[in-house]
Length: 451
Image (cartoon, rainbow, N blue to C red; front, side, top):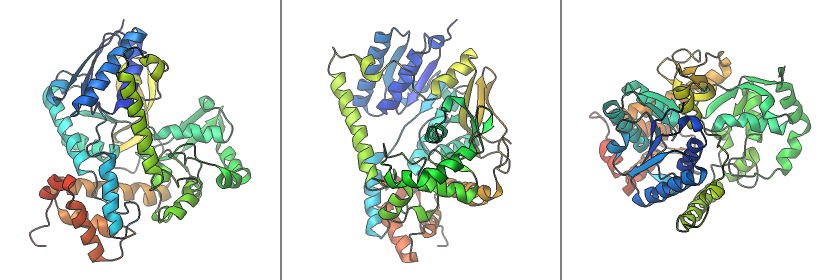
């Protein structure tokens, strides 16, 4: 018997994501009768998403209902699940910020202000949920998942489950070395964007030797000849393999993007470590292409929205996505057990990390809840050189967010490996804070009284 739920989507103007969610719900019969509430501050994008959703559900015969609103409280009221995918400042502000930092001698955003606006929104949503839908599960699907989810679990009583795509990198590794991903058993725990392949078995046999063989026999030719299929095609890059050699486990998903400063000093260095033609996703070459493709997709959708005769289901397809939101909802509501990769409060799941820090680990999802699996400790080298440094950075970010202490932001600038003087750090911080889009943040932060 299908069980209906109310799913609220905050930041529903993220068109690709919202319509993927609608598609997955439409193709999950056990959730028939469910209601989706789209919330965004952009009424034009809301209208487009609402129109697509109703047309898609109608074309595939899905029993779903929808509403749209710019009122967050109205959308949250009585929700069973809340999916937050909102991105407050957007790609154009990020580019403008990089242009400011470049004037001070920093390459591609070598210093930044953190995620104050995102964290404020996340905490506001969680606090609204405490009043309006306290039993709902918040599925955090917008970055920064690690810092934001830790903040919300510490400051509110809301149940939070953060999600990311990065763990699917295991499948890219499998395909590169010539084995079928469906035949692989794997684990990749850690922190969001900082996960490591601790277990990798093909039909019950350790497959790490196959990675080693690929590196030895095919790696050099791959790195010399491979042209990235997309801006984020870096799973088998020199950077990923170099981190494997440094730390003893293969980095998965977005993890190779992080690495040390030595991978990111300039565009030629990035091309060496992350490949041609863009040097990975975080460069002045790749980011405009990534944004351009997003805008083209939106433009295509806008044209489709204005053509009532066009088939929405043909455009978006009728195969489920690889997103985890709907399988998790289905598992919790209908006991259709699902194995997920989640970001949840640690509480002992990953040894060596405080209970109140959010970790990324495998989990079993059914009517008993989202149940993180307890995994083996990560190697000491990874803990000391990758995990704990990122936890310290997260804690500084939350300290700055909660206190408004501008000296913490300055410390972050001083810590950048591209900073060459104290005056350079002060100057770039002031220019970033002085941007019009950062006016609220600039008003919130100040130096301590004894500064």
